[in-house]
Image 1 (tube, one colour):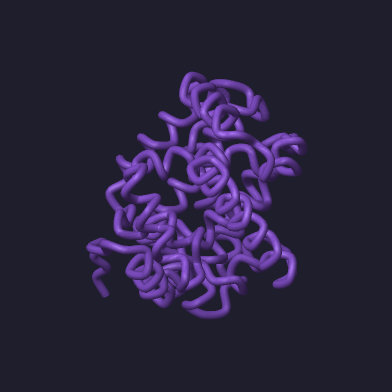
Image 2 (spheres, rainbow, N blue to C red):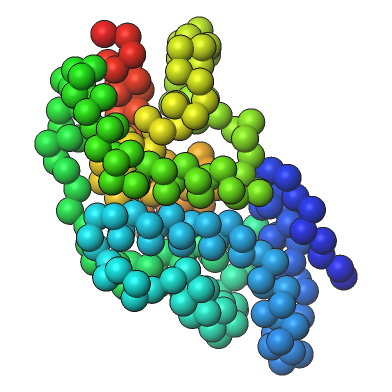
Length: 254
């Protein structure tokens, strides 16, 4: 079966990866490792994006030595892990979250546990607009904001219609708030602010939010990827959404 990488949305990416499962299984059984890796490579663009984001943040926070690792280093190791442990995948629906689970394990074996700014998280509802503006200026000056923005915009498989505010203000009666923020800020400023807030949140909270909103995994799949309970994942997602919601409201609607 020929697998063409013609997906345009995160949902299509999930479907595409699922479609490769039986052929990967067959190629591995037939010991055609080169063909196995060639097909697996088609499943990994979003995995590489995930690795790149994690490495960028770890570097910016000083949790990884500069210049020591590249995304390809982790992809090379992932190819070995996937081939050697492919029997762990029980069906096509499990393949995509399993790839992220293996990736998470590789990253966390390398990246030093980061310290997050507890003061920021605990006092997020008390920051004034000038304080938010100062934080964003520092965020941009340090390069973190530009780095993440460029990465998002340069990713050809990123769904630009999947607007960050739709994931923050999830209640139906918040549509008016989304419209107001959209008109007041524009999408690039909204994305910059969201990236800044996520950058300061605890790693588990940030990772769960991004797996749900950028890679479109459901709660059950994220629990598998992160090795956490459904309740823990749900709480982390709610905390991330609440933090973002409060930050937008306090900064732009004091």
